[in-house]
Image (cartoon, rainbow, N blue to C red; front, side, top):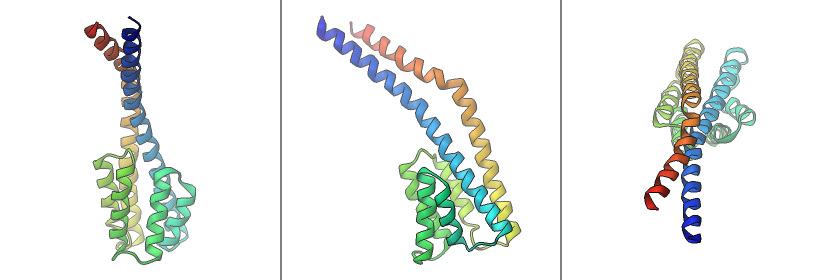
Length: 173
């Protein structure tokens, strides 16, 4: 009887943690999108008003952003300074694809970032600002969607974890 109780407790704990994990993934993705938005806003302001060189600009942004976003901007800046890669577009794409493996960003998020990177260094200032505005619009839309989904489903993830654990325990007993 004691072993069954411990087993039931372990099952409920495990499924509850799975529920927490589902909710946490959305929260982490939201934070990463917010940091990317912050970095792109900083980039837009620097390009619009100061005309800072891209590698130097990305390095400055890396100091002001956190997590994988800051690391991505730092890696891009270092590779641009060291001339690793053929173009800014290629460096941008390679770094974000590497970062995508370590982050909570989806394939669609990464595709939008890579599409933005195709405009780096090739367009005039006004066109780059337009490209940044399009990316910022995408980021804000996704953030709103995630916030709505978390409000709607956040507690559901937790409850589903607990209830699925209880269902498994009842079925096994």
